Image (tube, rainbow, N blue to C red; front, top):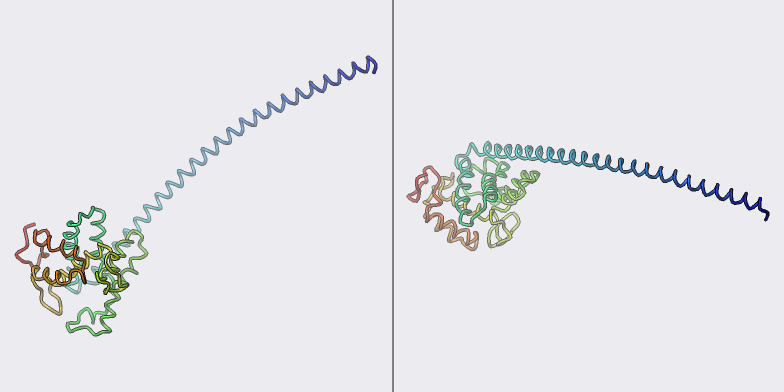
Length: 273
């Protein structure tokens, strides 16, 4: 190869190196710009995500509050329905209130926390909700019910639970309503639950319900004293009722923490408010 050819080749190589260096420099600059653009885009995406998350949180909170308000309205409507349907029966119109008072006194013996106590009271107020489906002819009847009529009455826990079932916040209350007529020995209704398969709240309501039934006027019989009622309850301890709940009820009565509701069936066990 001649000298001129070598020189030309060197010039070409230098040109290639310079061109490559220029291209690399250009690409490097473009990459830097692209990195800056990507960082900016990343920052925008983070801001957008934060904005969207805030909107989702705000909307979720709003929907949650709306749902709570709707459920509260449903509970008020159901409670009003119970009050309206029982207003024409004196013993039923006061019964739910009395059961709540007695159940609260019993529950104190088990040291119920406030939230559980509130749910229990709500369960007491709604425990007879299903009786709106029982014909007046049965509710007003003073003679013994027929077998067919008894089966109709036995459906009221199921009817009450079905009414409450759509209200998510009353899930436990719904079970109280459904289980209130179950028995400790498993011979109750509607599902034949036994022992601690039954909610403690339902077991308490069952005792409070029976207590009020015995010491209140009913179309089919006169009331008895709260002392005699306690004796009757003790006879069913361990069979119809949970013995621990019966013991708590009797203790509350003896210590005057459970007294007969204001009215014609007050006894000497009452204490001033």
